[in-house]
Length: 120
Image (cartoon, rainbow, N blue to C red; front, side, top):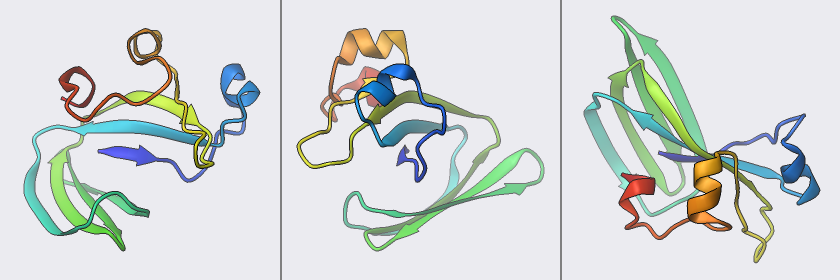
């Protein structure tokens, strides 16, 4: 799941601050997904993500906004990958990746959606 965080870090990486970035984006990979419900999907959009702890070692994830509504359960182990910062102004969407590997492989922008090593 790709997320744009609602708050920019108070102490961002120096290159993010120098570039005038104001948004952070990351991918969250959930393991052992079950009980998937997709009630509405009209593409990307703003929404609220709710994470609730369940027993034993499970999470309930719910995402809801004007463009989408979905929910599922997963194992409580998750991975955060592909952290980047960017300027949210139109035409200013250069991504500054935190990971050295992502910086080398994907330079300034998000890869195409068929790039399995990024989205897979």
